[in-house]
Each structure stands twice: as structure tokens, then as C-alpha cells.
Image 1 (cartoon, one colour):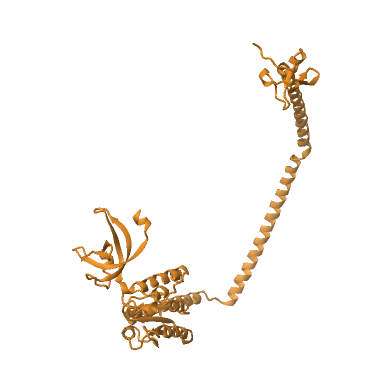
Image 2 (cartoon, one colour; image 1 turned 90 degrees about the vertical axis):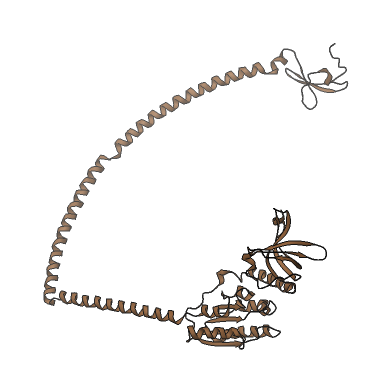
Amino acid sequence: MIEDGFGAVWIEGELSNFRVPGSGHWYFTLKDDGAQIRAAMFVNRNRLMRLKPREGMQVLVRGKVTLYEARSDFQIIAEHIEEAGEGALRRAYDELLKTLAAEGLTDSSRKRPLPRLPKRVAVITSASGAALQDILSVWRRRYPLIEVIVLDVAVQGDGAETQILEALQKVPALAVDLVIITRGGGSLEDLWAFNLESIARALAACPVPTISAIGHEIDTAITDHIADVRAPTPSAAAELATPHRQELYRELELRLLQLETVMRRMLQNHRQRVQLLTARLVSPLTQLQQRMQRADDLQHRAELAMRHRFGAARRDLLSLDQSLRHLRPEGRIRTARERLFLLRERLQGRMRLRLQNAGTRVISLERTLNALSPLNTVARGYTILTDTSGRAITRVAALAKGQTVAARLSDGSAGLTVESATPDA
């Protein structure tokens, strides 16, 4: 009941009694001036946290309410911990992500594949930041042929939103194959420009595939959900955007080997075909004589085939004529007329028998009705009394002085007025 009654909850409080046993799980208590609650964060979640908990820290915890049955303790299973100052930003982050997801902007179905061999790539980041140097270093090593267009923007602070939006608006005119939006790690406040709704929607409207690489592996910005591909670091984004040149060398060598094999096979096939055609080459006069002989042969075979078909058609015609003679309709009509006469006689006989049986049954029912009819009783001098609604009166108690009743006689009815009604002693 507790787990079904509460969804994910946010709790702010002071962290105390923090301990880490050999299992690596975190166990602690959240408290304020009026209450406290136990909490646990298992190792598969806490290993993702950058926060280092300490006694007395004011924190904001997102988790699930449950009951530890062994001690009957009401507790929180924590999924995320952050310092309390980040709470408002975290809630705004979650609300915006939920809104964008409801509009389908985070659906995997709208994610576009990255170009395999991009020629021009736009990188939206700070030109003085380490993120750009990491990307360029990877490309110099892996794929030095790529043309890089750096759109220098502020990645945090008051002007970051405007500059990033302006950079995204320039993308259509740059004729690039790919856009990477990136910056190095930092706190939630430092990364907040990449959690803004305006930037998320501008990135979703970008006409070319996009990669978002904001912060380090444990950081996840709104742009990471909107972009076609999310990279955990700027270096990873550079690796995702381009193939390694050694891979291209290997692929090129393989393609050259395949091409050489195909060309060798084609040349061999053409050589064999030339040899075959050379062997089949004959004099035009010989071919003409052979074709004339072939024409005479076909003419003879056609004449034989026509005679055979005419003979077969004549035999089929005689057979059909004989069949038609056997199938003349006069005999069948005569047989059908005799059968019809016989069926009519049988039908008339059965109708007479059924009418006789029905008449006998009617007479029997008439006798039964006469035996049960009250009219016979009335004919012997008895009378049936009914009240004004037509119900039969069978007892004196149903009569009252001055009451009007109807008397049914053998040849009609009469209206009567009760003068007196005396029951038998």
C-alpha cells in the first residue's frame, strides 16, 4: 500500500548517520527540526554520483517510499542525491524533460543516423574551452580530412542562451553534414544553458544530424535527450562523428582487393566468351543454307500438324453429333410429365387425408369445449353474477346492499340491484 500510494518523491533534509558497509551501499538518515527518516542508496546507483556525502550536509533526495519489513522501518530508497541548492533547478529540469517527451521530441523514432563520412562539421562550444581541444585532438589522430567550423559561444552565464541560439540559426547556411554541441563538465548551474527550453527546441529543429556531449559521463543535459546521438564526453563525440583512418585504410584495401578480384573474373569471363563466339563463327552462306533447310522442315511439319488437327476436329464433330442424338429432350420430357402426374396424385391423396384428420380433431375439440362451457350450466336454469368490472361473484360476502350486479342467463344478461345478502348458517 505504501509503495502504490506514493510515486517518486523529493525530500530535503540534513544528512546524518552516514555509513558505508563492505557491500558499498549507502545508509543514512534525513532529518529536520521535527522529524527524521531512514534512507538507503544501493551501490548500483551511488557509484554514479559525483556528490560525496558528509555529515550535516543539506541535501535533496529523490527516491521511492517503501517499508523495510525486517525492522518495520518506513524508509526511502534513494535514486539521486544533490545538494539542496540544486533542488529548484533539478525540478525545473524534470518538468521540462517531461513536457518535451510528451511532445515526442525525445522519441527514438525521430533520431536520425549520423553521416558515415562527414566532410564539414560545425562545433558549437567555447573556442577557449578544453572540450574543443579534445575534439580537435581526436580528429587530428583519427580523421584529419574533416573540415571543422567552430561556432564560438559562451557555454555558461547570462549571454550563453542568446549566443547558442544564434549559432544554431547559422547552421542551415553553413552546408555542414553534422553539428556537435558540447562543453566540459561542471555543476548543474554551470550546465544550465543546455537545459533551457529555447535551446532544446532549436536543436530539435536543426536540419542536420546532431550530437550532444555536455559534461562528463554522469552529466545528462536536456540537449542530450533532444539530439540524435548523446556522447558521454567531447572526445567520445568526436569518435562517434568520424571513422578512424586506420579503419578506412583497411576498408579501402579490402575494396581494392574485391575490385581486383571482380575485374579479374570479368576479364576471364569475357575471354571465354570471345573464345566461344570464335568457335561458333560460321560462313554466312552456310548459315543461309541451314536456315533455308530449316524453313522447309518447318513448312513440312506445319502441313502435317494441320492435317492432324483437321482430322481430330472432324472426329470430335462426329462424336458430338452422336452425343446430341442421344440427348434429345423428347424422352426426358415424357418421363418428367409421368413423374409429375404421379406426384400430383400422391399430393392430392395426402391433402384429403390431412383434411379428414383435421376435421375429426375439430369435432373432438368442439365436444370438449361444450363439456367445459359454463353456458350449459346456465341453460339448466343457473345464473352467473358479475360485478361492474366483469369479475365473477361467487360468495355472498362480496355483495352489499344497493350494489349493482350483472346476471348472465342462457339467452342474455340483466342488471340487478342487491336488496339483501344473507350467507348460509
